Length: 519
Image 1 (cartoon, helix red, strand yellow):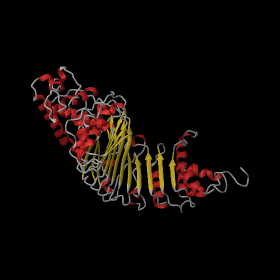
Image 2 (tube, one colour; image 1 turned 180 degrees about the vertical axis):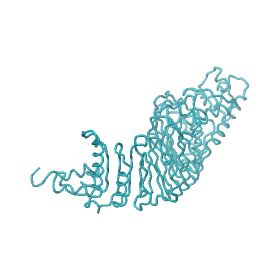
Image 3 (spheres, helix red, strand yellow; image 1 turned 90 degrees about the horizontal axis):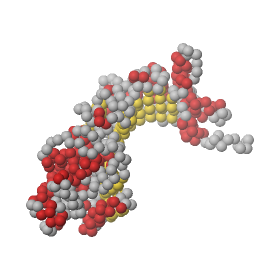
Image 4 (cartoon, helix red, strand yellow; image 1 turned 30 degrees about the vertical axis):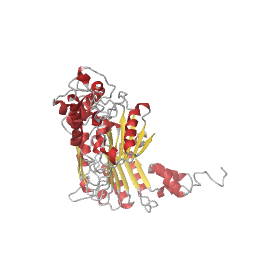
């Protein structure tokens, strides 16, 4: 570069350097850029967001016994930078405090107080070492009383609020529950009178040994989200009697619900009359055999659905649909056969069990083994009745008796779905992702529950650890929404094996025209 023009970064506007470059660095590293040139000398004081992070500070070599001195120096330096006279005039948009090693509570409290009281930070993130690693930070009272704090992100802290204290301005709250949560993090949400967005997130590596019951009661909450995944042994989890992770939500103004978790947490949702949209991804990522899972455990997905009866827009992914099929087949086996048993099914057997007990085999199915003797074979059927034309006559045995039995079974399934999941009279937009050979059994019955559906997006996906196949055996009666209210259907990812689904919708479209899109 020409000497009189300087380097290309220094020629950038001060605002770009301070906002878009320096804020990517911890404050001590950003302040160190002052030595670059006169132009850079005080640019760090204009940063709208500040991060203090002790990472790497402990790696410096020193004499034995100097650890405490170095920690004292670190906090003194951070306080000096945060309260620098040249920076005091710049209100903070955000302040982040991440301390995993040096976790002296009184020093961290002092930094938070400077950021909120002197610098008027609008967003605060506090992530410190958990209690069993030396962390014991109790959120200081300035966090509750600051009139400027709008967003809070906390991890591994303690919330001890005096009687009557509330977060006077907080509108957005994120709680990290990766580590075993302090009990105080489970029941303070009613102390947030203007809270609009609440998010729980985390990744759990070990099976927790205590129950976590998060109670959320808010008159102002509009968005609730949970993103929680784990790698622990599921068999141990769903065999216990306790609800290890339970979320009780009472939020009459709740508009949107987002759940992305693979532990099948327990939910109790109240006052959801104003709920507009929900995106539900709950259940296993792979290995969908659910060995040993109890009906009570699997029924959690239906309990969740019961809380969504006023929903207008709903998205269910392949994991959720797989759980739905599993528990339906369990309940149905008890309902139709009147036998209560703890029989275990593989993924393939679950689909077969559901099809045997509540779905009608295709015309080409000629299986005659004992397990399928209750299915009706198409060869001898002469009824001609439009409703029963796909039923099979089991080679002439008992004529129409078995046909009637299957019609009764279909009605039983309709009743079962309505009982376990209810109806969605306000739902107009539905998006489903269904994995190979899973979820298809329950799909048409789910559609029947959507009495006012206008838009359907249906996507077939391939799931790891799931047998490939296409278990599509719809019941004789078509869902009313496809005959009356549907306006648009979009199909994705079906290719050759989705031909029967495409024909299913094309047939209905011939009687009740709607926009049909195949991608």
